[in-house]
Image 1: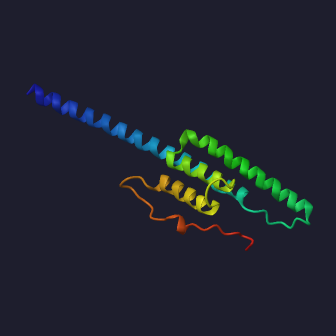
Image 2 (image 1 turned 180 degrees about the vertical axis):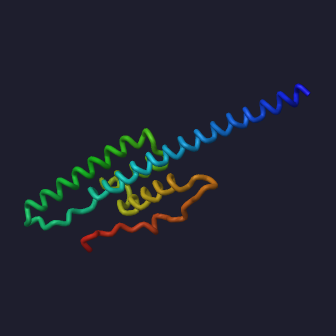
Image 3 (image 1 turned 90 degrees about the vertical axis):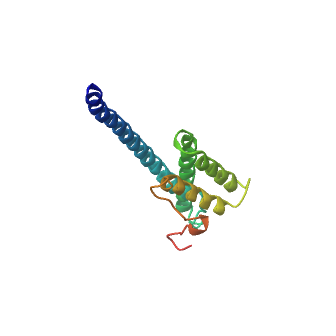
Length: 149
């Protein structure tokens, strides 16, 4: 009789503790994912620094301003790459460096490296075991110039 009373008290306590830990783990995992998502957004926006300058060189002021914007965007991207060591999975860090090497002319096609970087980030955010996944590949990613160039 005493064992069943002990079991009827202990079982709900243990179940409550397990549920609390599971809930805390899910909250932390979600916070981590949201943090990475914000960082990935910043990286994607900073990728514009690696696109070619579109202003006419004869318009020195506009050309200079666009060149300065591109340099600032590149610096933001590189800063995000440096910070990525703290929060990104290995595959994303490697894809970032492959992209940087490619745009410097030290390994591969920059467009393909950019596509692979974007897909690797997406997989990090979407491939969560049983929850959801992505089937998109680098062939599905296109960068469009809003000015139509």
